[in-house]
Amino acid sequence: MDDYQSDKRRMVFWNLLGGLPQRSGLVVRLYRSAQRMALFVADAPAVGAFSLYHADLAARLCEPLRDMFSVVPVVMGRRDLPTLPDVEKVTAYDMLKRCPSLSHLVRQVEGLASTDATVLVLGESGVGKELVADSLHMLSARRHGPFIKVNCAALPENLAESLFFGHERGAFTGAAQTHVGFFESAHGGTIFLDEVAELSLLTQARLLRVLETQSFRRVGGVRVLTADVRVVAATNRDLKAMVRKGDFREDLFYRLYIYPLTIPPLRERREDIAPLVQFFYSCYVHSRGMQTAPPVAMSQVADLCLHPWPGNVRQLRNVLERSLLEAVISHAAYVDFQPALRDDDPQRHAPDAEADEGTWKEMRARAIATALKECKGRIQGAHGAATRLGLSPNTLRARMRELGIPLPRELRKKKTPDA
Image 1 (cartoon, one colour):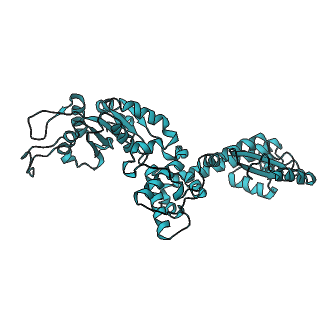
Image 2 (tube, rainbow, N blue to C red):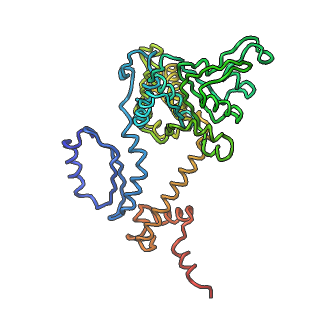
Image 3 (cartoon, rainbow, N blue to C red):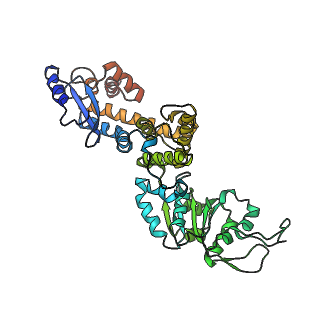
């Protein structure tokens, strides 16, 4: 109900309850605003059916729902799009600022942008490490200089030195002309070394020399060139573990690990999902000059908030664009994310599903064990555990067997010595 404080139906509801049998209720508040409230309500046909343990259990189970209600906006359509002065000028920094959970990271980026310090960005694939690197460049005094992105994982080992530092004509077979490398191209700007952990130990040694001396030579050249470059590196690997195993140079690690920035995975910052959906929706619609577009319903965003997102922000954007395009093609009333989510490889979510199932079984087992303890092992009757849990005695026994909880009579048999 809207405006629940003054709604007359509230008083009528309580008056109707007067003649009903006494029951037990458990209520968890999920969300409250000036006009609305969302509640989780559990009911049992017995007095005293719920204990403080059940209240704590319900609160834990409702935690994802509470997060969902706190971030999900109203139905979002074409008329609800945020005003973007020019979609062509929307920057990575604009996207970072849309994420409430990244406010501390944004402040760090703003502070680091005024320096030339080497920055190492850490995080899973797809969380937005390139966005941080781009923001550092665009907010710095080097923003008018080049921003060179290097995917270190895609560099052929035999060409890595030439690609990084360039080569002179005739330096090797096939070198028909002089080639300018990444560092020389980035002069006066920023070089972004993505997936830096994938470089070979030999290339790491060559990279270390440039970082320490700020100079290099082209392959086959004798002239020393200066590298006036700000270095931002990124990886989704555990560099400390790689150093211990000998897979990453310790000296290069300390040269890069001057100021690390860690971006949490999307599953740990679900409050960012709704604003990101709005941001991507707006960019997609504006960039294509769409006058009308199917809206995104609140329930659909709620589903997104509960998704595990192994591919993080990159996967979220992909799902949104695919779903919006499908809705436009099929002239749908609303954007439906479910087909795109179902297209994900289920094996990618299997570990999370198993963990969730294990957690759920553990919570059920604890609830049953607590009820049995409070009822002194009694299952049946008005004061038995089955009544306390709102189950039939047979159902409770079946669940106990399923969860490996011994029945009271089995415990008594174990305590009775053999004749």
